[in-house]
Length: 582
Image (cartoon, rainbow, N blue to C red; front, side):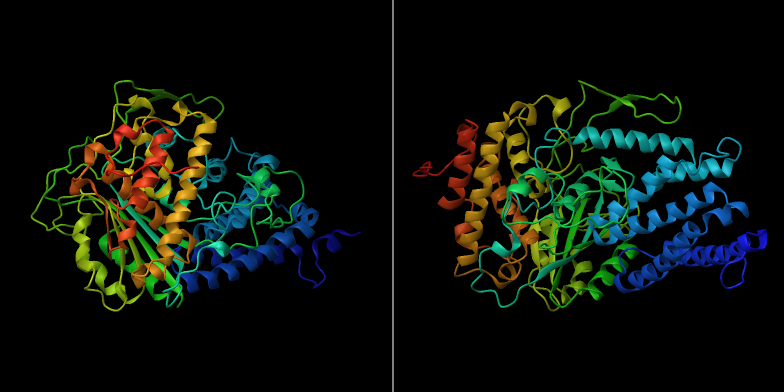
């Protein structure tokens, strides 16, 4: 075969010219999608499929013409660059949709880059190539300054250290192995319509809070709780023996073993809600994102808005800073970055609070949430009135702040759709003395909404290592049974407000509401917070009387669970509340 034949494609155009034309086209489209925000549904979808089509064509072309292109001067790092961008596209789509198949495909491309060492050649001679290798190794961590890298490592250490008390006990995601399948939820008699959680906007900011990059601990917990547990991963063995759920086929066509290349989707389950996560946004950016999400919300959809921020309240917080313990670490940079060792400071504390520390107020603003640093008047404040224009669409609002009760003003002032409100307590709750190095950080209210049993155990003064596995499993089954029973009672209640009736058919929102009811009952009956309204969460509109913390139904749930841990003396129950037979 002649050299000319090697270099010319079937169209007569040299292969390398076709290739570089495709590269230029792909680069141009990639630069457009890179600047698009994830929260724009239609526009992002359109660009994604266009740019993905070009990169698919480019990847296939270089595979079919690899030898010719190499002879024409193609470098291995250039192939790696294409693979890296395809990985970025998959990961970006995962961040927008929460579909695990996109995350799996992204991992496969990144794993291929690593194992095939696309960036190795010339790594020590070319600074730009070394930079590409570094960006690939930690795409979403990229910082060019070493001090910023060091800060990222510190954040990783604190983030992982802060939430290890119950690691690997059960997923925060919705698992159909452990909880009711969406097709098995109780029928709601008075539901005039059935809304589905289609979108969620999670916004958090507290000074010096535990976070990783721009993902705070509370946002992480809430994010996880709004996703389906992949059917082939955490509970794969249990899933195989369950007749109610099936495993989906692998979503990728790659060959060879991969630790994530397994059945991680379930075709019987709906897609995950779309999520937008904001950390310390400007108020204008927050409003723009909220407006865009509301505008694109499907007709049968409801938007979950989660706001976790410090506020201006007449109730000063008594708890220390929510940042947790100062964690020492040592770094060794030998043959690249190695994970730092972790040393816990025994004199430090990991406070759990139902609210947050309240620095001195600057300015005279009314009750609001500070989603940015103080000292700028109301420039970084979200007021209840700011959210009212968006109540033209269905909203499910969760406020975790000492100023949460200010948002009760929204109820009755909506512009079209009555809003559902879950509001945290206004004051932090003193916790029993527990070994401080084992106590995680973050909000107790958010923790109850995302991991109720873990929060209950921590309230009793225990951590995961104190509880035997069989006892924890028994408690988990009891709590799940009790919540399902509460859910059935709520669905059958005659005086259930339509706001709650329309969200009960959605598994995620139903679970949040039932966990709120449990949280409210626990904090209302807990001896240190008994009869003290500042320690109680609230919801608007009101729930039926059967869901009241003082009702025998809710008291019995708390009594049974407390009895299991031998801790009934930590609660104050009404006379006549007794344990039910098994």
